[in-house]
Length: 399
Picture 1 (cartoon, helix red, strand yellow):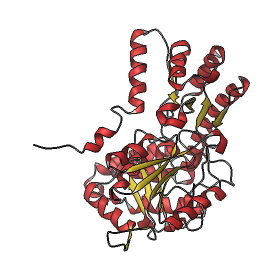
Picture 2: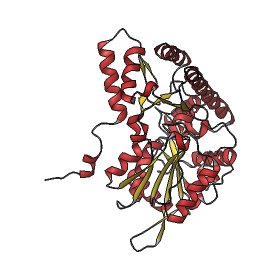
Picture 3: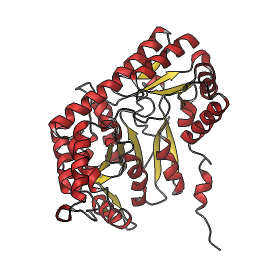
Picture 4: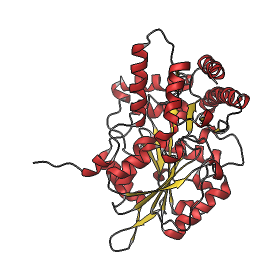
């Protein structure tokens, strides 16, 4: 008889955002007359940029002609998009990447989990707490030990390495989901130094790098000296350009990043990742990759910057409301997330229920992101301006 991977029994039976959806569905079914404003899941609401839509339309027309039809594409992505990503890194961060270090994917979430295929089950994984659940669940599925580094108000939600803790794989997210905090260069340099000293791999999630507005803050881990020897970076078009329903992103695996085989010999992860992708991934559709390429054109960049500015305007409204009520929070400056303290010392799920039932506003309980998230609550800036303003009016009256 077939047996299961018992590690799946170690993860929670349901995903955080599934729990939220069930509660909201039950409430709306019981109160169909109520207008519920959703600020929990980080899904975008603005349409794709005009230049992106035009590129997609042109590519779709190409697929309808014999002479320009595209079947299977390269698993690592078409050269035109990999070249565009490389140029973006050069212009945005001053980072030089070889195109064969760039792998196009169907969103950062996929590769953040899939990258674990390259590592043995005996590796110890370090995550900051609170944490994006995918980092934890995908490694628990593989049987790895997880250690947690508290991310708290005392360390400004940017925890630094603990010399007493030894980890082989380290997940960092900056700008952070859920806390909205951003590591500076000095702090990231400490993480790179730690990884190099311990032979660890930094798995750096920069899905929100396009929201960084302070020129002193890094957009990429590769702006830190030595990172090309120890770091893999994940990024996405989802929040940069509204591709949550279109699905496209990229992973950077420098050729200098290695891990040890059973005999203690260093093995380049770039070649292993290429092999893995060629075996288990058929690539992102041509039409989607042409749309993503348009994001990096001068017009595309103007349009997505306008989109990001709109969402950050929502974040400013949220921050203004919370400051007016004297509620402590993080984020909302170089991040589309607000990480607020639950008022009156309330626990996060109780505040979720209060906000849903009394104000008809949905957020995300901090406890769903880990033990250190208890007592906090995440709100996203990805709604419409009208709904964001109304939600803040409701919150203001409630509190």
